[in-house]
Length: 274
Image (tube, rainbow, N blue to C red; front, side):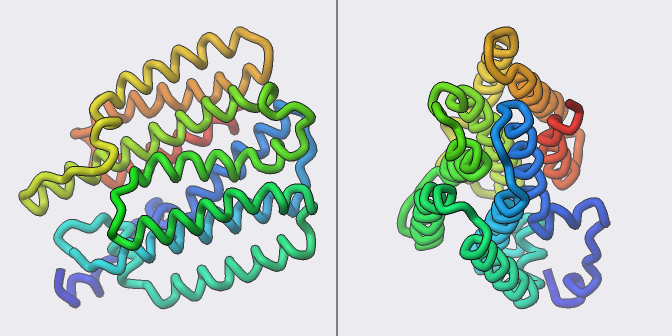
């Protein structure tokens, strides 16, 4: 893509939340609030702000690191956007990190801070190893684990019996996040193959081969758990999101890539229906 084409590029308004990585913190906040309401555990404003800023900073930084390789023939719209606007986005990432650091130091409860050191160490290790280009790590699997850990951190800290009370909801949410990430990765791999004329071999190829089987297994789990004891509405929301993902993926070739990319994140907001 030449410079004149880049100057003419104007993303539609509906695509901006994804291009600015705002969709991830919104999803995390929605599910964090839903979890607090369903489990009856306390949730302070500072904890919500720290989660949103942390997730936003991680997604901004990860995308900017990905965009360092200007393979214009193969990059997605969001990576192209990050590459074109790298300087202001790096500045934005720095501001978000500064605000996050101040909130953590001044407002976050000590117990939450201590428990949060483990996900923080995992995030730093993830960024260091993934972008070193030496290790072939299933990125989607790690992101799903870290996203689940961040969303459940405060509730997990406050729960008297977190493994029993929050273990099954966390497992279901992890499965939902993984389905979302695998669907996007599969679409991008196919787009890479069509544009570059070569096969893409993602680290999650084996998982993607059985994507619909994983989706059906998650739906079955949610149907069973929604009738059992515990936060049944949680499993109803997870199942509804998973069913919506299946509906998007079945006719996927009829929808433009960026429309699918937006819809697959939009259906993660099902807790708002409850």
